[in-house]
Length: 157
Image: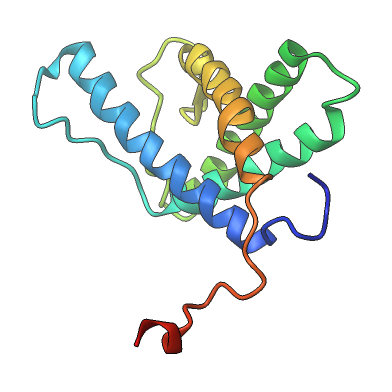
C-alpha cells in the first residue's frame, strides 16, 4: 500500500475532489427533498470551490489514515476525521468569506459557529468519514497505473 507504484498525489487529489463534489450534490438534493421541497428533479447544488476543499480535506484524511491505522481504533479515527472536516470547512469558509465567496451559510441552524459550520451535520460528516476510509481511501490507495497506460495505436489497426 505504501509502495512507489501508488497513484500520484495529483491523481488522488482528483479522485477525492470529484468524489466529494458529487457526494455534496447528491446530499443537497436528497436533504432538500426530505426536509420539505419534495422536488422530484432532485436539484443538488455545490460550488467549484468545493472541488479544492474536498480534495485537500480528503488528502488530509488519507494522511491521517496512513499515520493512525495501526495506533488508533476505527471509531477514534472516524472522530478525528470528523474533527478534521470541521477544521477544513471552517477555515476554508472563513477564507472564502473574507473575499465574499463563501457558498454556504449555516446561520439559520441552531448550533452553528459564525455561520460557517454547524453541529447539526455532525452525524452526516461522521458517517461520510467512515465511508471515506472504508471505501474510497482504501480502494484509491490500491489503484495502480500500468507502466505504459497510453493506448497502443498500432494494435488498433
